Length: 305
Image 1 (cartoon, rainbow, N blue to C red):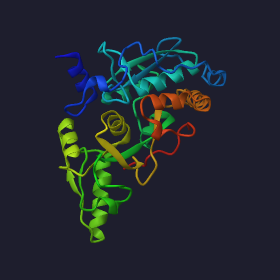
Image 2 (tube, one colour):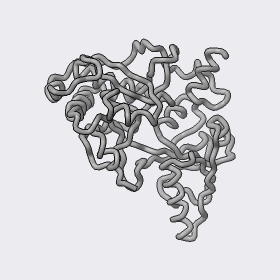
Image 3 (tube, rainbow, N blue to C red):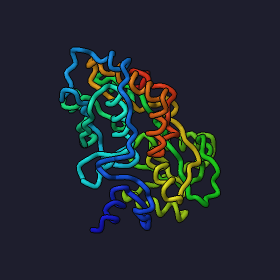
């Protein structure tokens, strides 16, 4: 397998995309990663009784699956992406070294509660159920996005009526699928056409279906779709809304309940928002649309189902 082909597979690109067009640094060294100075006000909030997994080091778990969140670097073992970059800002602010550990999504909850990791930074949404076991420091809005082919005649999709009669792809078993089904049923109740919901097991096939007009739109996490659109030029955004629609959802650094780290992490993030480093990290990974004005500790989460 060639290095370019392997990189294309790692990024989950549509067929025909060229790895050297991406302009993405996947080196383990990450020389352009945004760094920060220690923030004494945040350091002062660290509980003296807390023992880091490794003294002097902030050990963070992340799930390397998709950019812009994180993938493995060219050494196949170092997680790189927007989430490790955010973790670096927090570690620097707290005067700590950073160790990022790649884990399966299903493994992070036990890893954090058992003390194997100090925190997880992996696109975790704040929910009321999770707040029973974890503390949260928010750092990004949880947005879903509708994407269409660049030459599509669709101008915007902002409300249930806008999906009536459209053929829309969505991933099965996801929150966005549930929202799309609710929108479609609401349209039926109003006498409008329902949406024709499509499912694809192969992301590359789905991308080709969207680009060729076999489907009208794709609904999914805005972060990954925006990252892909910015680099391929074959799709464009026509609407975003909260991943917890109709409630607002937020993404947060997640720590063990009662560990006492959340306030310090929140202060660290707010310091980086104020000095502009936070905006630079988001811009580096095309995540600026999901910026928050301030980090919050344990805000109201999505309700229990």
